[in-house]
Length: 84
Image (cartoon, rainbow, N blue to C red; front, side, top):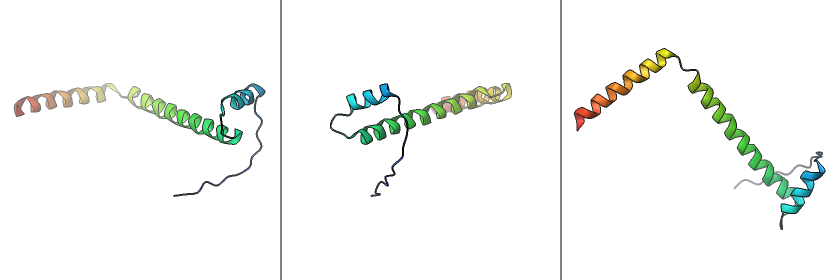
């Protein structure tokens, strides 16, 4: 099990953000709540980036790629039909 290394940083937060953090932190400290929120935000950002990359990858396929996929799909269907 790895131990977390903590580092003190100074950041500026909007007063409305601070109020919301204080309101929603429950029994946790403000720092713990901020860390929770940042981890979730980073995960969401990472997920969005992956979705954008996937969309760009599939969007950039050419007509030749589409024809190849269609031929492969047709051959697969015929092959599966013979196995039945």
